[in-house]
Image (cartoon, rainbow, N blue to C red; front, top):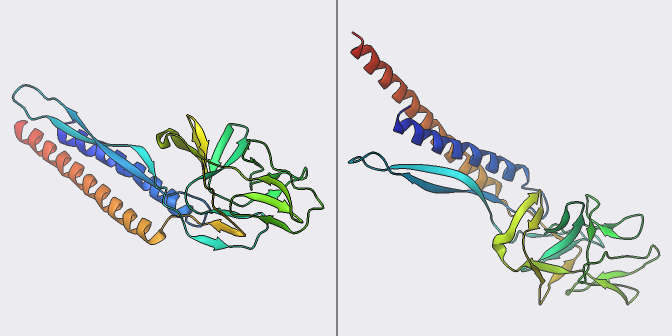
Length: 238
């Protein structure tokens, strides 16, 4: 295969991965706390033979998460929480601590607040939050303080990575941090609300069409190059 074929194939490979990312965004456009992803393309330059121009390839191997806050939706759920501004809820999972913006929680059989997957919500000190079974008039203040009948039960901890680059998507709405985390100095939460996905389905569909057209353009170029090479071989073989 000639250089034009290699260049086109590397671009098409990145476009295929970008199409998968877009499809995943659309599938999660109604998932609370989901963060939109995008594909980052980089240029890889290879020095060619002497007196020949260098060869430039477009590689799409890195995913980028857009941290723009999603809209807040009122649920009136007692243990539903939405974060306004920066910060993440911290969950305890079998794979280690995970961060999330998805704020739908409920007490489990032991009275601990857990998310939809059963992962325990941690307080400001890194411990599970316990809600007594007979708790009434449960309120969650703006700073995350949880109380029942006016008596404090604990404080929901909001944290953030010290270095945002160390945060990576683990699964769905969960993020892993390969580094230190720190508490948010001025946490701001709303009880009875959840943060919606920050995905705009119409923009994703538009982008999907653009990527599909670019991929088809690369396919046409490969077909044209294939026909050109066949024609040259046939001509030289006469």
